[in-house]
Image 1 (cartoon, rainbow over the protein chains, first blue to last red):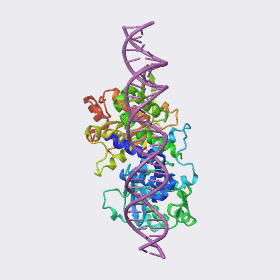
Image 2 (cartoon, rainbow over the protein chains, first blue to last red):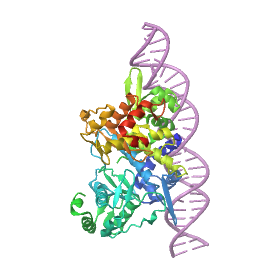
Image 3 (spheres, rainbow over the protein chains, first blue to last red):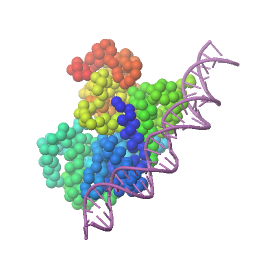
Image 4 (cartoon, rainbow over the protein chains, first blue to last red):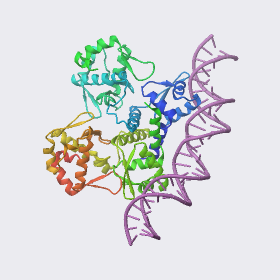
Length: 233
Length: 233
DNA sequence: GGGTAACTTCGGTCCACAGCGAAGCATTCG
DNA sequence: CGAATGCTTCGCTGTGGACCGAAGTTACCC
């Protein structure tokens, strides 16, 4: 394994301006270079340099749209790496906090985890899908069953499995940071998340990863997941 | 979350000499400062500086013994973080290698993963323990059952559960790098690993993480795990 | 077309820090 | 005791790279 490659990746993360940028991107959103400059507390020129490096190293990807360049994390693996580093950083603090994950109650309840839903809500959704045998969770992959469409029907979501062009799994388990249980990542997780946002069941806060459940969403989710499971969210 | 803390951790990893040292320590062994200096390709003074920083940041711990200072990784979390970075570094290579994990066949079969056994052998042991209901694996913790002693008896290993002083779980699942399935980490995993080494069922190579199964070990493990499961190792 | 906004490239300054040589502690051995 | 070994502290040098200002490029709008 190429040591220099590894050192390179780590040193890219190891500069405050870039760290701040990467952490901001953990919410799965795409930001323009200008916004990221402001977030990172540097001038646009400096940020531009940073972003080029991060893209070249494969940590970010960008989408050119008019005169804007929207940057976002390149992959789930990058997000996982960052969480790994955060974990160690949190560990370093003297107080060996048994309490894991974010302190913010809203964050613990529901938040963006890269491109899907995490927090107690994310775990509840995963539990529901498993209990209804819509999916089966293996250690590193989730297998979809033909009950999936039926189980997703109550929230009027249909999941088109024909994305299966690539060999990437449509569903993957993601260990929830705070809850220490699995929620759903991968295309299925992303699809569910977008659906809940599009239908105004969930709303993103202006900044940050927190998700708020709307009144409409509470009704629908309680009905979908069942009152008992919903009460734990 | 303190951004600077995170940047600090990453920047510590992001220097070739330190990266090399940390990677060498991934085998779970403890090395003296001199050895690490040689491994990292720097003079002892320089290495000494690096090691102080790594210890202070909580990435390493050291044990003073005579005039030697034995350094090793501070925790499972640090090892996990390093694997996360390695993952991203490997991803960056153009060839989107479907093939995961180490290329070395011996490494894929059995290797040290921090302080326990990984590779196909590690996975087979975990499978056996689960199949025999000696443990139950949850997403982030393994629960021991009272069948454990019985299941461990054939290899003449008794696991004293009274270590349970700390609130840390005695058994944790660890996602195998190459196999993409779980093997056993935590005190139980460590105990099993040491037992197999002490009884000369497994031998460590001089350098590196690879483990070799001895003839004696092959007989014993085939008997313990069953011929079918052993044939997959 | 000109004006503006998003972004990059270029040139230059400045500082953090990796690395080494030399000297200073500690511990073990004869 | 003195010699040797493992490791650290100190002082110094050299360089990589973070950052900014200014100028250049691209795309949008009127």
